[in-house]
Image 1 (cartoon, helix red, strand yellow):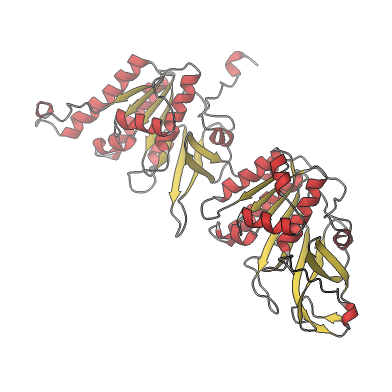
Image 2 (image 1 turned 120 degrees about the vertical axis):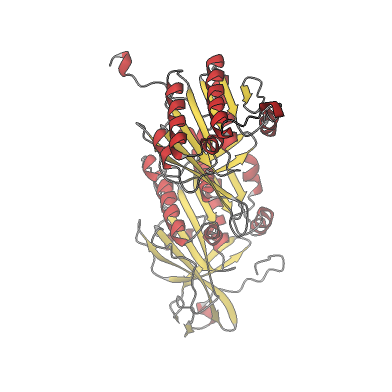
Length: 502
């Protein structure tokens, strides 16, 4: 391959997640459009792009038609940046509104447009930047007065920039009605930033690449947040990008009876769904599986949606499952999630980070709260499918908790995810001899011949204990059982005044 045929080195945007979406960065010496409504992060993204160039020893120029230099420096200070290495040029001088600048022979827009474009070109020739930001095109659109003049001026600037060997970001706040397709056709690439406000919770920001000539990029919407230090972009999880397949022998749940019910234990690379009504013991069962993995010296991550971390730790310790030492040692990551403040993209990114850090078991408690973070059910199913496929390919044991509505009888869930799970464990209440008791059964498993029985279980200071199969019952799964046995058929009641669960 000759030197002329080699691909030019990509220009990093300075935002790691965006570079990952773009496959490494931007093609140098091209003009790119960054569009979005006010407040979506265009200025922050542009400044970070210039600062990245400055760290590489490149000349960086920011030409502003709307904001002042003082405002730009304030943005930098808010992110902890020093803009001393950047050349900031404010196109509206302090005396630009004086009376001696007014004229009446020509329409003001005709004079101002020509002067503005010439001033931009003059400044670029003076500085000779490697990276350039022009903020914003909405001002040129207003001065142009017509789409034809506007397009001609943008084409003129594009050809001018091409002869000056600089990588250009032009910002646009979508001031025009609808999508400006003319501008899209002129730019080498288009990055669109969106912001939506839900009925409750914080605003959700996301971006997508509208076009990028001669480059492969990851399409679709990608969540991002504006944090101190710039944009934190969470690339959309695509399981096909992580093709490594890992497996292994089944691992114990910490209960030999539960292992037997599952047909040998939990198989790496599979997802286990624990479904049941509130308070039946789903979280305790998952904590016991997590504790068993931690005792084997493995790393685990527990993502908690439904209760405070302190409450979970206190409740687990009372059952003989003290997790705090494992948190202190770094083996366990226990993270309480607020679904109203976290986007699904950020959540998937945190799970990826946990797996990259060595976690072999991941628990999500619960899917009901995760559902509330999604616009509608179909998005939950699609994203959960990608997430579980990724975890499966990484050989991670996934524990999913799904709360069901109701206590007995016709129990329903918000969404059916049973077909996504490799193993489905159902926990139910039943009544016998004047007591409310609990039953557990394995509905399906794709990796082993599981036990087909329904067993009673209890939760005490030793965690989850399983009893003999309930062969004297009919209708336990339906929630309306008929008992035809004797007291000896059931587990002995364990009453411990110090145990909060008995």
